[in-house]
Image (cartoon, rainbow, N blue to C red; front, side):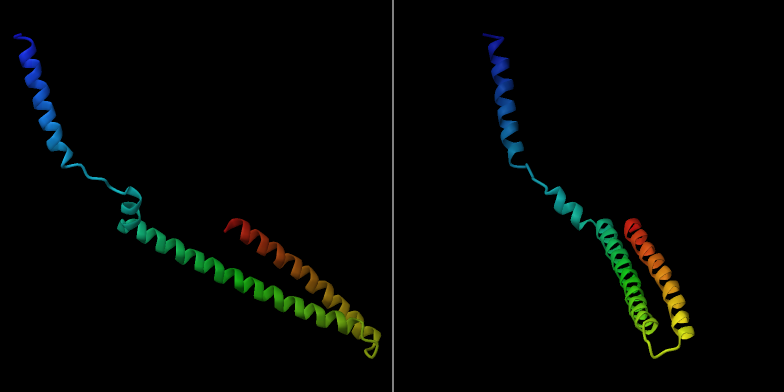
Length: 117
């Protein structure tokens, strides 16, 4: 009986302690804490700024490509214009070839830009 009583007292003590501890349990949404952490917000702002810069740079390259394509179409139509002399048409063809090479290079640069970013 002497052995049973101290064990019963210990079990009762743990039960009471456990009941008090149950009142103090708190749950924390770590994802929400992470989102609201000031360094996380700063990092998100930096990422958004970089994304905006990349988007603007990409739009500039696309605008350059569009202008080059328009110039190529003008040169292509001029090189086929029969009202111009043969020498002028040949000059337009040479310019057209140069522009096509430049366009291919610009498109390659754009593809490389997209891969890197």
